[in-house]
Structures are given as structure tokens and as C-alpha cells.
Length: 455
Image (cartoon, rainbow, N blue to C red; front, side, top):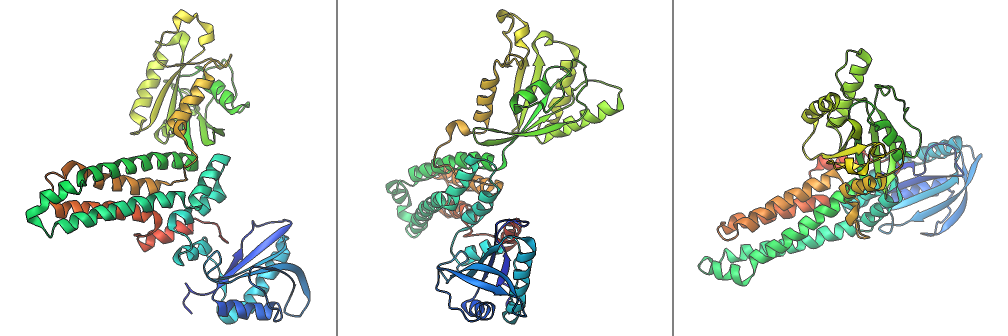
């Protein structure tokens, strides 16, 4: 039997002890008929109805009583015939039912499902597109209400519809340009009357808007890594505790208290943020402190946002200059860099005319402004109810689509129309990768391999 068509089985509920455990099977109608016939002694299962059925072992001894639901293709999650067995959630009970199913299903080639294989079959059978399939995993992994809502919108097709609508416009424009090639003597008139340049500009604007929404979606999914850096005793650990709302870092007046990086996860307006407190940056001969400083520099290389803290009472000291000299070479392209001037409660208002975001971790002054700045960086200041979940893969596809469309916009007056048509095709293909219309098989396997088993 073709392994890709063989019936599959897996636990659909989380492993471990629970009130209810769900076992899911999917395969052809013939395979499911055979399994149901032997497992439930010929009981007729009306599709989409719940049936109370005894589950017995090979010797007819009771294992459990289960609620069993049969879904008939194509009206099922996978687009195949699906059987769901809802029994008690004990580990032993679930394994006994799984073992019994495997023995009964051996005649029809039943095997354990690979990670994400149920959703992969749903995609291959046209029940959902690839963006929706990825949204299934994102919804399961969502760490905040905002990210869960965004993933749900993607699963409902919000993201896919925008892609499909854009692609239809691209294909229509490309078809017009290719038709113009058949009438070279009237090429200019066709281009002008067809408003090709304006249509390309409008499409580019739509792709740029899509890119902004996708970037917000990626932040909702992946969060931001915010690294607190600066010389010793500028208030990094105090700010860490303030933002965390908890005493997660030790705070003392002794320089070099923080020797290793400390990580803590928070949420700002639905955006997951990983805060990293780091060792103070300075010249030192202390071996342990040097190791901590090197870890700080590595954290800087992987940061989305750098909060460079300074002490308002010693802005021009040598240690602060040393810190900057260590930080700058490690900054990656595109990282957000914010200067935060702390301890403003220690000076008069007229002495705070300095560059940077003013802050006092002692009084809380400036904390709300800093939070709003993080929200702005995350793109959440423009968040809307229509936003969706997105991945780095999606951003790459959109960037390529935008680049090819930009080439058309810049060159439509002088560009060979065959080249323009090709650029439009490449732009369309890049968007098509998002929903799985144009995608290499190896990438498809990689995407679904990251799903949990049973989904």
C-alpha cells in the first residue's frame, strides 16, 4: 500500500493523565469500515453522530467505554474518512486502545501518523491551504490572547484571502501585458489605455500593506527579544524587575552583581517579549565577569531591540564610553536601538535635557512611555482586527513579490514587455508559495514535520 495513502492513527489529545483522551484515525472508507467492523463488532456508526461503544481487547475483556464519532469524506478534517475515539484519558487506557486499534488495523496497513500528517492530508486533499495549515500549529502554540486571535483569523482564511485577491489581480495584469505582445505596433496605446503603470503601482501599494500586516503577525507569533545593556550599576536589573513586575534579578549597589544573562518572558499588549538582563559592560580582569560580558555581546547579536541604559548622573564617564565601544560592533542590521537614561529622580528637571528616553525605575517615571515605544517597534500601534499570524517564510515570499513588482513599476515605460510579464509571473509565484500553490516538496515536508503528532 502507498504509505501516503495508508490509514494513520495518533493521539489527538495531550499525552499524560486527563479526564478525556482522544484517539484519531484517518484513511479510506474501506480501511475505516474494516477497522470499525472488528473494533466495534459491526456496530453501524451514523456519520457525525456520537455513539457510546464498548472497547474490548483481543480476548473480549473490557478496556473502556468510549464516545466514537465517524466523519465521512470529504466532510472531515483530513478530507478522508476519520474516526475519533473519545475515552478516559489515563495513559494506560489510551495506550491499550491504541494497541488494539493497531492490531485490528494491521490488515489494512494502519500505521502511526507522522507529526502534522493529519493536517498535511487536509492540505493535500484541498480542505485548507498551506497558510491555514500553518495557522493550525500557530493556534496550538499561541502564547497570548492576541496571538491566538491572529492565528484563528489565519485559520479562517483571512491571510489566504488577501493573498488570493492580490494574486488574481497580478494574473489579470500579466494576462493583459502578454496579450499586448501580440500587437507590437499598438503596444504603447495598449499600455496607456490599460492603465498598466497605475495598476502596477496600486498592486505594489497593496503588497506593501500586506508586508506591514505580516510583520505584525510575525511579531505576534515569535515575539521580540529585548536585551538590556550598559555599563555596571545603571539600573538594568531594576528595569528588568520593573518590566517583569517581579523580583527576577538581584539588585545591589555593588558593580558587577549580574554576572550572567537573565531571561524573563513578559507580554506587552499581546506581544510576547523575552527580556534579557545582562552583565555590565566594562574593562575587567575578573575571569567570571569576562565570561558574562562575552555572553552579553552574543545576546546583542541576536536581539530585536537593544535598550542601552545610562545613568543620568554619570553620562560622560569612561565606563559608558567603553560600553558603547563594545556594543556597536555587535549590532546586526535592522536592530532597534533605544537609549534609556535612568535615575532622573536624582537630578533637577533642567538637568535632564539629554538625548534618550527619560526613566526612573525607582518612581516609575517613563516606564509607560518605554512600554509604548516597545509597542511601536512591534508594529502594534497600528494593529487592527484584520491582522493575522505570519511566519518568516511568509515575509520572505512577500518581500520577493514586492521586489519583482517594484521592477515592473520602475521600468514599465522602458522595460521590454516580455520582461515585465516575467516579473509579474515571479511576483505571483512568490505569493503563491504562501498558500501552497507553488512550493517545493522538500519545503512542504519540513513545514509539517514541525507540527505535533496527532494534528
